[in-house]
Length: 162
Image (tube, rainbow, N blue to C red; front, side, top):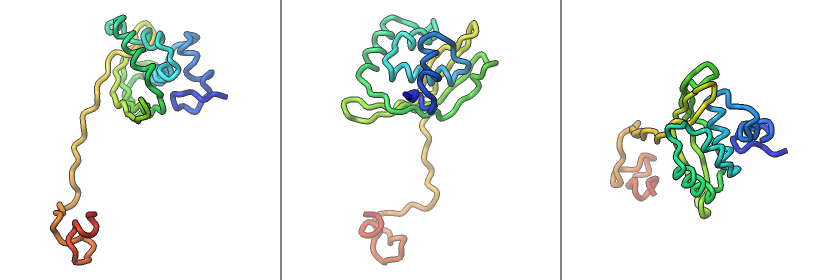
């Protein structure tokens, strides 16, 4: 039994392989996203090209995507959020985090992918990086030279701030 690379915990033969081989089409934007990730992991670059919206298909991109993805060892897909993209929708978005390794180093690809449905088929339209979330401190700022919060009487930098 070979688990599908998309992270569904289903067998590859019952999950993304039928989509990649053209035996059936994705019912949702998320299903297409998962199958495109599996196609990257399985080096099935024709599927990635064919499921890209015709307005964004360019042969140079096809070759560039394949060259880029061949160098990567895809590790895991995490779906963070989906909006619309169901069987009755004509558009949807999927926020995902794809983890991969290149030259022994770990990387994350975080994206919000836009999908459209035309003639009953889902296509990847475009993707963008999510907006960074600004961190907001919940308590007062503790300076390096302030007394330590643990009550030891030492400076923070010499105690808990080490």
